[in-house]
Length: 634
Image 1 (cartoon, rainbow, N blue to C red):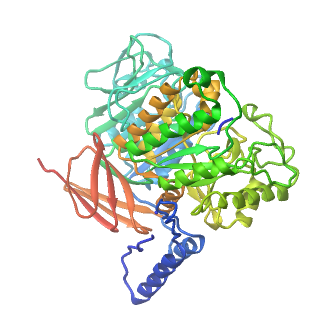
Image 2 (cartoon, rainbow, N blue to C red):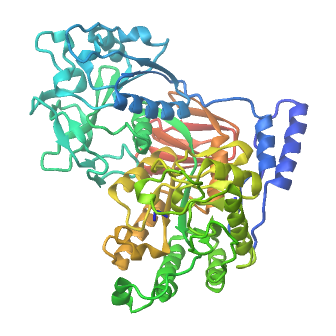
Image 3 (tube, rainbow, N blue to C red):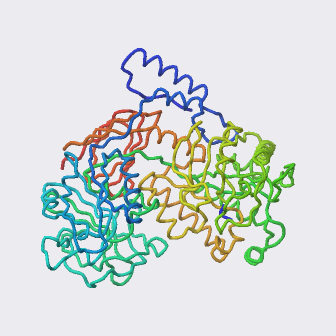
């Protein structure tokens, strides 16, 4: 089974009426928005429902602005082109780019190709063009129209890979795309298959030197030889090292070419963000800044008896292994790396969906672990009374989640949740359950709606960022009634290549990581990858150290939810000149984190802190609405 005291509102006040209003809101937030967790140890910065609603009432409808205007071309008849355009649109809209999208009809055969002067689709002062299809010749884009715009300083990103037969028409020199792309020749007349890659540079912060396999990249690409001026960022991880992503300058213009499917999904948003930012001298956008380490099914009942793998390695029963090896090992990692855990308790493992829900057999063991979790500064959330997902009859499970018992009524679901919340308070003083993780990340909409209405303290729902159709797949967001969605990104102690790809992408987009593990990972052949706990532990600690290396703020799930609230409430206005960049923040509650991507060298920040986490990638921490970053002039 796949298992922070509001300190103030820092706003520029321009009238006495606004001053009085904001003072009232501040007092209200201080009264309503902070919940003490002296026993628990974690700093609760989650903003209560009433306080959040007060903030929203005072806030005008705004959006981020970055003074960039872009035209995005896509083929509405091509699924991959549409998917790529949607993901790029999502990222650019979050940056405040003024984006125009235009669908181009691309015929299946070249019997008649209409010439398209793309610049006629551009708004005044359009700075960027993103092409979300590989059929360049068949699209009819007029190079004689496009090249002068690029030469004068336009940026162009080819986002959807390339096709060998769509790069050069020997009968028409005006249809030769290869010089613009920086391709001198091709070693094959047709596309070749690629299923691995290496990141050569820090285009993706934190990614330099990383290698990824076919669970990340599995597509066709052009076997291209490049002109000398091209800078290559990604190549295949085979003996040929074929270029997959590169850039070049075309007079005053900038060209970036993606020769693979690296921008077509949600997992690639960091790549999209990094590539677009790279085409700008400087770009600032809000980030969350949190690393959450989740343990699902904990505290819980340990499986009875022996497991042959555990017995052969440690000579323990499963329960004794949990107490003497697994939990002390995680405690040591937490102490040595200054992290804390968010755990999600489960009361029992029976399949009862009718009630009464009274199984408390695991209470002594659960109390022991609960006390230690809170003493470490951690947090306990709810996983459920049992491990049956809250769905009614007829709910369609994905194949990997098959075998569960469906619930008959919503009231039974609520009764089980109520029982588990009551049970949690008996474990140790200081437990405040504010977060919920669904068993196997499966939660029906009717169950979630009912829980939101019934349990007013349960406002944080942690699903998954990437998942199957039956799972609670989320964006980082604040819903109605101040329900905060805080999706988890990766799972297991030994993460797969695809999960590392998502992690490095989210470092670059949301500046966030959330991993979840289970006490019984070693008992699961797939999750344990052979059952060597020392290897699992080493891989897990390497992941934690990677997060610490790049400066992610260690939080509990509720602290992360507070960070998500601040992120969702924040809008960035930015304007760059030759000496630096001026940043104005709307919706600043108390503290903001921003990511600055720039080819310049920052020398001075007017307020806050600025830390470089990788080449050309900086994190800004500030409590002021207006910030000025000055460049080094040498």
